[in-house]
Amino acid sequence: MQPAWLGSAVLIEVLLEARRRGFLGPGPVEDHLRHSLGFVRAGTQGGHSMVVDLGSGGGIPGLILALAWPESRVMLLDASERRTSFLSDALDQLGLAGPRVKVVRERAESAGRQARWRSTADLVVARAFGPPAAVAECAAPLLMTGGRLIVSEPPEGGHARWPQAGMEALGLAGSSPELHEGRWYRVLEQKQLCPDRFPRRSGVPMKRLLF
Ligand SMILES: C[S@@+](CC[C@H](N)C(=O)[O-])C[C@H]1O[C@@H](n2cnc3c(N)ncnc32)[C@H](O)[C@@H]1O
Image (tube, rainbow, N blue to C red; front, side, top):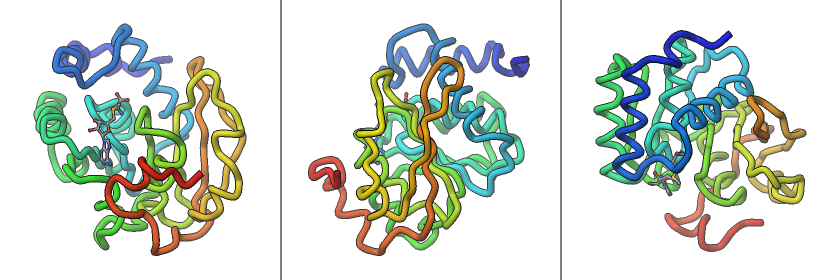
């Protein structure tokens, strides 16, 4: 059964506005909602101490996770001023504004080096943030030991995208991909804290891919 807020006119209007501003990709808004629901299923029951949506853009999947998991703290992290100001307005419209759900305008590489955020998340999610190596290098520093990284995979995604040696260098370990809502999701676990040398300087994780 789908939760009632999924069909909320306000939520649909927020996502349509994100699309109008170029913050959300093509395809029906309902597909983006379903894509987000896959993260909800992969992230199990919620109750997370801190969920970070890496490169939240128009709020997919972070806004949906904040609605789905009213007990969880959520951070919508994005480097873009236009996107973060849109996200702040979206929180107001959705009744999510408050200390539980925060919008942070910061580069992920910088957030991962700051003591207030480093190793604090028990879940990091990423959709369309970048290649696996950049996602992993930006996510791992934010994760506590035992925390998880959930990434939605392209339809052709396979094991080769997440080589074990590359994961291990960041303290991560992979698992089999999971199928939810018709899409594949990769769930990785932070087995030990990410080494201090990561993330590298802003821009480097994307330009000089670790694996
Ligand atoms: C392709 S969009 C994806 C947005 C959203 N997750 C989605 O799937 O619709 C990538 C987003 O990541 C943000 N971004 C890119 N590099 C970043 C970085 N190093 N730190 C923080 N945000 C970044 C961009 O501003 C953009 O909003």
